[in-house]
Amino acid sequence: MSSKVCVSEAIRAEVKGFSPYTAGKSIDEVKEAYGLESIIKLASNENPLGTSPRVQDAIKLHAASTFRYGQVGTPHLIEAIAHHFHIPEDTIVTGNGSDEVIDMLIRVKATPGKNNIVAFDPCFSMYQVLSCLNGVDFRQAPLNKDFTFDWDSLLKLVDDQTSIVFITTPDNPSGYAPNVEEILSLHSKLPADCLLVVDEAYMDFAEDLDSYSMLPRFTQYENVCVLRTFSKCFGLAGLRLGFGAMHPSLAEYLRRIRAPFNVNVLAEQAGIAALNDTPFIEETLRVTREGRTYLTQELEALDFKVYPSLANFIMVEAPKDGSYLNEELLKRGLIIRPLVKGYNLPKHLRISIGTAYENQVLISALKEILNAE
Image 1 (cartoon, rainbow, N blue to C red):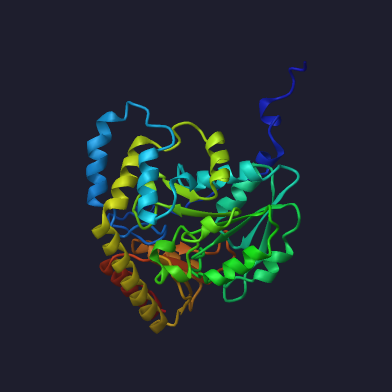
Image 2: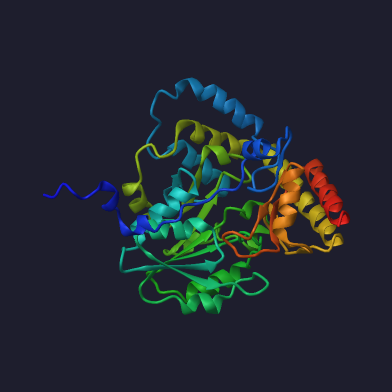
């Protein structure tokens, strides 16, 4: 056995050329970089109302028990999810964020070096990140110019080795959502052994859910999985909690491979409390939908092109260079998401819906920036 080979050289090829996920600027980073005391963050699609009072109480109540392992499989959380969303318990798999469920789906369904995974471009970056880490070929089809879904271009990439097709609805970063009939049409054209994963991370914010969500329908199909997250509407981004809803036979395979105690005890209790805090959910939806309407009207008045959105964010094409506007907003303590890096959209910005006050501050700042030129 040779002793001359460095450990750093004996690394998987997929990892050597791997580009990690890059998060946006944090509040602390912006404070330090710009010497600011107060920051408004409208970049990461978090809940503008923060954490629900019931969740805070649940965390305090169970904090002293964190020295104990939780119950494998989070059965109490699964019961709460099933009750809230009216879906069978045996279809639910919880994860340390929906990212973990995505990873488990890929590891169960896709064979490295053989299968491929298909999604749109742009899409949620973790589809590609986790496909590459698992050694699975990742293919992307372009969206239409208006950021709606080009189903034909997607289907051209699907072959008999396609194991998973991912779609995000409402989509990120545009907020666009196709109706259910379009999704079912796509499903009918996929190979029977290809899994259609419908990522509904932002679906809570859509109106007329029956026209857009696959969650009430997935039980009719063996090869459909719906993803949901607690990070957005339920305000638990920092606790990392999500779930997948799928055919019971597929769910059983995910349970076999998941790490034990993958959802921590505080996240589980917080999830149960969040599902039961109906007033907080209703207020979140009201603030988001009213804010979405307000920002759309105000930004259009400033000559921004605003793309229709059913999510808790909007995407805009700015009348000026997006990087310039982003930098000027950062100087004023406002964090939004420029879409140059990762999306190659130099004039486009993604703006999370904030509170009424935060939205007004943003509009005032943009007026100041644009009028100064």
